[in-house]
Image 1 (cartoon, rainbow over the protein chains, first blue to last red):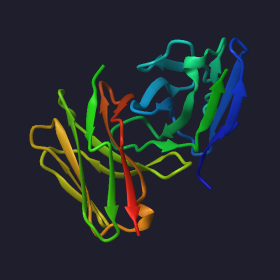
Image 2 (image 1 turned 180 degrees about the horizontal axis):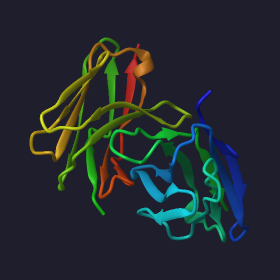
Image 3 (image 1 turned 90 degrees about the vertical axis):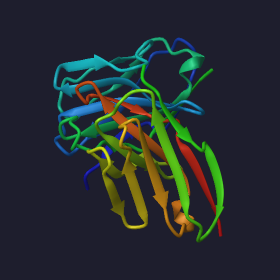
Image 4 (image 1 turned 120 degrees about the horizontal axis):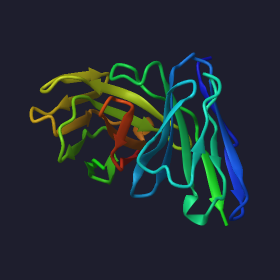
Length: 114
Length: 111
């Protein structure tokens, strides 16, 4: 089954403790992206990647890192999480990132930073 | 950055009623996308619009790309309980790698 898999689904951590949220897709998609969803703000793009070793900032990249060493994986790294990074995170992928290439989303990771 | 304004932000409707929601921007978009997010899941693409004035249907859903390219509308006819969720409009910008989402319209359907 074609899918985008995020892990974990739920994560509670403390301020300053490094964490990684994994994202994997099995559709051989070139484009991958991370979003955070907050009440009243919708979905905001954190980082995206057009292909292996090609990443770029979205609208809210501060406090996050990403890497794209393999085509299928695009982990989101929080080196020193803070409470304002408490949010619902979504990973998405698409064939090319172009207009005719719809985004496929994972089921989300709910992160709480205390 | 560019913003998409969606309205209404939430709505309660009776099963069987028709629903309309819209999305506006101060900037021109060349593509408009409508996604639906079911509770506990990620958004799923419903309809994509690529040309100003375009009207596209997907079952009971109809979406239009505004002539000014600064707005889009989504209509749902004869709503059913499984229409419950959050509906997002979205517009790719720049080289399409960056996608702006609206804040969403939360739809509740009363059986």
